Image 1 (tube, rainbow, N blue to C red):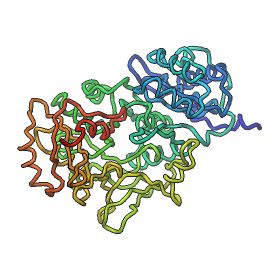
Image 2 (cartoon, rainbow, N blue to C red):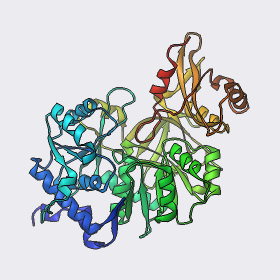
Image 3 (spheres, rainbow, N blue to C red):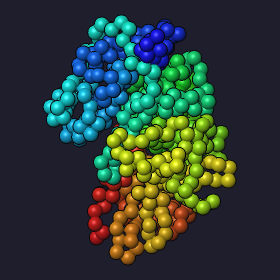
Image 4 (cartoon, helix red, strand yellow):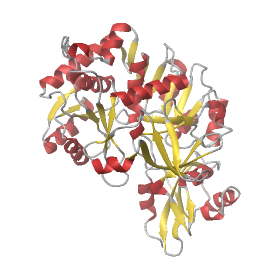
Length: 488
């Protein structure tokens, strides 16, 4: 028996076991696992005809769609690690990433055909239209050259400081993440997990891989729209949802109707959820599970159960099954969050120095600062790079932001440190007003004085319409910092 015949192909297995079960639902239709398998095989044939050999790296530029999902698993079927590209980047930035990993073929959809041609010309790579390929004939027997093992994705990090790095995420990483999720919230055959976050980030793409592994349905939205998400929760049998805090707040602002009991869990990552948002969500029937995760750990690391949300406000919960969390600090002190377990990546692509810096004796150094309480609940304080040191005192921006967002006039807050000749850094805050409200910094400062130490209070203020975020919803504090400019 040759290696190809022994290959364990996730898609092919689900198509054999659950051929008529919905695999991917989207605006305009549904693909069963059998149909997904056919589409994956068709795109795999296109990849081969485009000139990719097993082991060659691919890049993928496209919007959220079932074709995106098919392309990801087609690359796996061909034995090609694939790098999902962030469509918000410029063609020049995308070409740099394509060259960085030495991609052989750039896969794209019709929505990004123009930018893809520009990137391909700049990077000197081949092109493949995944929608056209998916519409073609399936290639009988086409399968990967061995077990689905080793590098699956090359996920570029956000790159808030320096050039982004490509994290190598393996099939084993994604399988362990799917298993940990199943142990945490369970799996029901009728589960429908809504993906309204970008599939080019690990938080969005994990929904597709998790649903495939677990044999459930991934529902794909082209983009986040609060009204459409609310309608899907109420009318389309959505049982699970992943969002970031700002998305949850916008859903609650979009209307005042209750949510159905069929919604089993709303996983919220990317930052703490304010008490006001938690209480409003609970009063309307949304079971919010706050989470902490990162690309290098294949998304989720810890999760806070709904029953602990109000008693452990601001916590991201406890580690998922198989995951270990520790702090590089003395007991009771804040420190860098360390993560170990089967979801932790093996390193960065072609970057031994960055890998050695990130992985230390089996532990992933996350660069995030947190604390653990007596019960083992994790509180994420901030990115180490975002720590503000003012007059010798440490100020964690996330703590100040959480306090600001309890004020009824503040919808969102971003807190950064700006240079100051006397104190080293001053705390500065950019605020987005709540709908119909006007922010008065004097009033907000008075509010904060009852909640925070004086050295944590912002000394400079801005009111803005929106905060800069990545496509995965993470706050870009380096851009907020630029708004304040030099100290007057």
